[in-house]
Every structure is written in structure tokens, then in C-alpha cells.
Image (cartoon, rainbow, N blue to C red; front, side, top):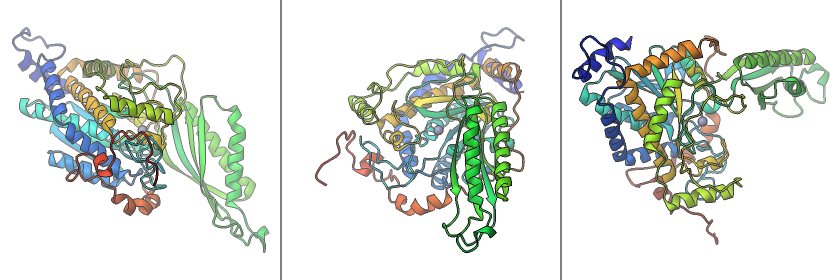
Length: 533
Ligand SMILES: [Zn+2]
């Protein structure tokens, strides 16, 4: 479909060398020059990239509550000529920003949410919450939109000047830590008509992979039991305890674990266990993540969980309802786009770390008891091929996107190896020069890969051929959510509201301070905790 459009341009660009009537194959000759130009622009945008990384770090908002992040990022996009649709898929903090026209449509995504209780002062090598108990960027999701927006703005300038057809879309992974929005975007048809998705995620090296990575998919589901309240001592025989049902459900699941596939992962928290001991709990809620490496395994375990919930209701004479809170399909990344991106990774290389960056990284590794004190990566790991043996681990709802449109994830080097994810240690470097340089390197790779997709018509054709003929050949995407499952947009509202005012005092003000570290009075890298106060 886009071929017709790009064909005319490609003919114009290569008219000197292409034979009459022969469709030219391969990249346009201007491509190398455009990539070099984009990299130069991105070097000149380092101050902008740093401000975006630091600002989003300072907002540190939990999933579904990313209002400050949304306001800040979408105002940048609007100022730069993007049309922004807010609140897509019924998710108040989600947006869909587009610029340009025609094919190809390239959609850049990255997550924006933080982690509960991971508030951490950046640039210091010891545990120091900025606000005790508050959320923080304990996975580094403050950096990916900086990568994407920087790349998009650089490529947009070239597209404008050269009148290159194509549409850039910028979208956020809202509430990724709850894996609670990307399947909804996909369900609502957001990726219909998109030709490729380039996703970014923070890492400690720069790499891309294709096929099935390690890790799982999951269903995130809450079970709420309804019973009867009664006086816990006066007439407990009149009561039917919803908390008993939750406990029996958990006991049932924990016994069943032994007979599940060893690569499954599952965990739960009791969201509501009642009010006080002398009132028989009439309502109780337990929240499960059920993970497996294959979609069928997830479905099987979910069906088992459902049976156990119903069994617990039967045992306690309560009733049970369920609500799906999140879903993540096992991921499958596109081979042709990954290989093209890998070429760009090799061309860009890792950032040049200073002695201070290395000292800071090593201090964090010491602090976290890393097996090896290696400092920051100085060698690329290379492209990741599909694993021969599946390996368990975390999930990302980019999986749902990857079954709707050819997708890759660029992991860029803004964090330090050996940190614990979903933990304050993963926030320590995320507003330092390490994060800034990693984002700049990532932006160069993203821009170059966007230019590949815009200027090499074979690449998109091959990407779709792989998607249809290899990825979908033996597999089918059957989403875990139905058309009726609403997004869980009330999640984290109370927590965020309880910290918002205190956190506001720490928002980064780029008009007064060069960097966030300067605003915080940190002389990077601070390796020793000051004594005497
Ligand atoms: Zn993440």
C-alpha cells in the first residue's frame, strides 16, 4: 500500500541510476547522509534531551496517574507541530500524537510510569529517598520518551526539508508496571494502519533482538469475594467471611503451584482484607499476576485460577467476581527491522563515559553487591537471536503490540548493570549524565532506523513478509482482554494523591537550573554519604 507512494519518491531520488520502468530496490542513496545529519542534530539537542529525562524523573508518577508527565510531554509535541489526541482508549493520561502525512506510518512508543516506594535521590551512591515512601523512577521509565521525541524531532526536520512522505506517531506506555494499557490500545484499533512500531526501553547496554525474547506473558486479575458481615464475637455464625475465601484461594493456588509448568511465575497481593478483626469481612479482594511463557499456558493457568476462586467461594458460602486489570501477550519481535536497527546500533556505538560516570556506576554496583564490579558497558552485546530454550522472567505489554504490527524494542544504555529492577537502586543513575548520554545514543539509533523505514522500501516489505509468513504462520493472536474490559484507570490514584503535593516541590525547573542534579545541590558523583548531620 505504501509502496505506491514511496515508489514515486524513490524513482525521483534514484532516477539517474535506475533503469526506465524498473522499480529500484534497496535504500535511497541519500540515506547515509540523512543518518549522519540526524546524528549531528541529536548531538546538538543534548540539552533538550537532558531536560526531558530530568523533568520526567522529577514527576515520578505511578501508572494511570501520569498527568504531569502527559502535560509536559504533549505540550512539547504540540509546540513542535504534532496533533495530539488526549485520553485515548478511555485512559485519561494516554495520548496519540501524530505529525506528517501518508505512508509509511512509524509509531514510536515508550513507557512513562514509575514504581511505588522507589523515591531516590539521583547521583548519590547510597539509599536516600527524596520523600520517604513516595513513588520514584525505580525502573528508569523517565528516559524513553526523551529518546523517542529527540529522534522524532530530528527526523521530522529532514522530512520537512526534503518533503519526504510519511507519518510519525508518538505514544506512551501508560501504566506499564501494571501491564494495563497496550493491549487496550491494540484492542481499540490504534495500530491499524501503522506500518512499524519502534519501542524503546531503558537498559545498561544498547541492543535489539528478534523472535521470542526471554520472559513471559501474563494476565493480571482481581478476584473480589462477597460475604456477610457480622459481629466477630457476638454472632459470628451469621457471618460469611470474604477474607476466608481469599485465604483459601491463595492456599489452593499455592498447593497447585507444584503441578504447574516450572517456567510459570505467579504472585498475588491482598488488596482488601477487611476493615477490623471484630467485623466479619463482607468484602475481600486478591490481585493475581498469572505468568507463563506461552499464550496457551497463560490461558490454562488463568482457567485453573478461576476454578480455584470458584472453589473458595463454594467453601465459604460467598460469591466471587473477577476483573481483568492488565494483560501482556508473550512478545515476538520483527527480524528484518531488528537487523536493520542492529546495524545502526553498531554505527552509533556506546556513549563515551567519563571517569566520574564509571566511578559512580562502580559505587552503585558495590552498594548492590553485584557479582562483578564492571562499571558501565564499553562493548556492545550484539543482536539477540531467539532463545533455543525458553526462559522465564518478566513481561511487557508491548507483546500485544508485537502481534498487531511489526515491532522491535531498542534497549538503550541509560542505567547501570547490576541494579535491581522495580527498586530504588534502578533510579539512582536515571537523572545523571549516564542517563542523558544513554538517551542521546538511543535517539541516534531510533532516528537512523526511522530513516531506514522511510527510505528503504524493501525493509518494510520484508518486515511485513516476516510478520505474516513467519511470525503469524504457526501462531495466532487471541487477546486476553475482551471488548468489554475497561482499563483500570483508578489504580494508584489514592497513593499518588497522598504524595503529589510533597513531590511538586521537587519538580525540575529547567529555567533556573542547568540540570536536575544542580537543582538538588548534588555534586555528581557523590560517592560517600556526608557525616555529621
Ligand atoms: Zn519497564
